Length: 388
Ligand code: PSV
Ligand code: MN
Ligand code: MN
Image (cartoon, helix red, strand yellow):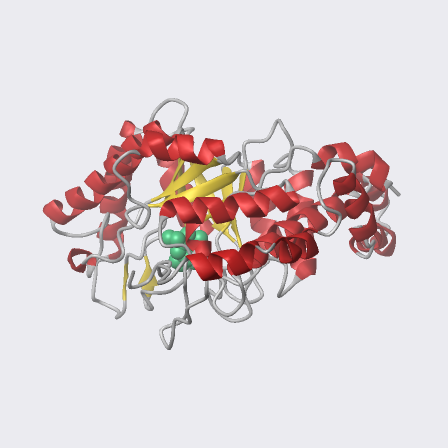
């Protein structure tokens, strides 16, 4: 079996981008619980994200959500982040909270509303130029609730036209990633429900248009690692939104609900060339922390991704291929499971110590007093998203 010492250098370059909205208050439609110390501004969200990076060394980037994170001067925001050792990452558009989008945004039948939604993406692209962001991420709430409510085919056509206008605006070093989600808020049909639809739409645009795979956006029982393998094979996996789910779009801590699934996904990422300095696949979290503290929630998340990456790297590619080719079913499965069951936590603690990081980031953060300080300093923290 591959030893930890063989893979430790492969862990060096791992970057897991944090969503700004993970640091805001969030909840369900029943209740949003406030958490003491919640950021009131995007600057405070970036400062909290920098804490996650300081203790884990894994997360030097923060994704923005527009308009939630709107500021007057994005270059200044970029400098502010840089002073904290952070970069501004993916820009997420938002066409799901304005009344005009009740019946759709990029798919709407009214050209004026479609243009408003396109213009919002143009604004996001301008912001990306100022922040130095690479990816424009589009997740659409578009869809219908009742059979017959909308023309499914016409909506696809309008979506294709709108996306083409947006794609024509992105810079040569920028990418458009289109996220899919099988239901919610639309319940009968969603305009981008699955990887196939996202793939079809981005393939029509061009090379710099790719699929974003949010791990929480699949029906129970979906083999997500198969989708990963297929998209990598097609050269169309742009980015991940990591989180975990028990029932719907739970946005829980990645690796909390099903660590084995996370391992299987990361195994296919590595197998398909989606990991490492040569790869362009972006790893991002898309989570909310409704009842737990947000900074340690994000820390636990990036550590979970790192831990399952390390375990997946332990699978010996030559050994598993030999077993597969020989038709050794149990042997091949055993190689995979041996890696999965390897507890890499002590080795990772040592790995961190060798890089000037705390061996136990969660404990080091808890002992730092930062959580108490922000709870005292910040009053009236902002809500993350829905209804903000
Ligand atoms: C809504 O489902 C969602 O969780 C999508 O996953 C987006 O990535 C995220 O919100 C932010 O817009
Ligand atoms: Mn997402
Ligand atoms: Mn989601």
